[in-house]
Image (cartoon, rainbow, N blue to C red):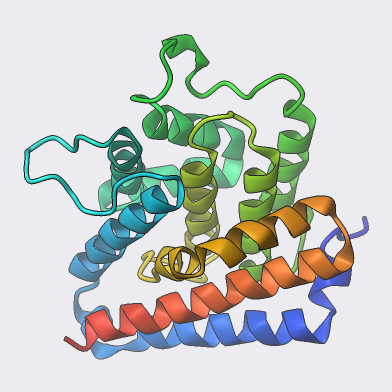
Length: 244
């Protein structure tokens, strides 16, 4: 069976960017602080990632001083972050490996709970999105053999460009990208923080995903290399946390 991502993975710029991301994240996990105790670093990564992800979708960056987070986009991103941190992460990853569409529905329910008036719309893809989502599920459950950074980038880009739910798709897409890095062993404890880089270059991020969605090789390559670079930069941020 032909690997649909093999042609992109064979392009030297993509190969090099993916390898750099793998090396950077490997270095984070080899750091003595993360060998001894990585839980606090993972929680810090989750928190920073949630803030940046919410901001990319127009939400607040800073947490409220109140017990409850007032901004609905940030509140949703925080709920998603909790599902990808601590004991819940193992359960989420286990389900992702066998039933990714179930996880996407759950992530949307968490992300959009304060944004969708009708509860029965939570976790339900819009009409016309099912076929592409099924193809994406096939991809992450054994449909490709390319390296993890490339798979994470394609899952991220496909969900952003498809907008399967119509609300909170960005938060869901970035969470799914994180799940790929964990489930594949690229970043098993979710220590990297690529979201802060995507936020830093938000305009370029939006343009790159638009180009990815058009499907031309140039746009796909640009998106995948951008995502790999963000994984690499997110690893450097994680390393700085470990060295504090």
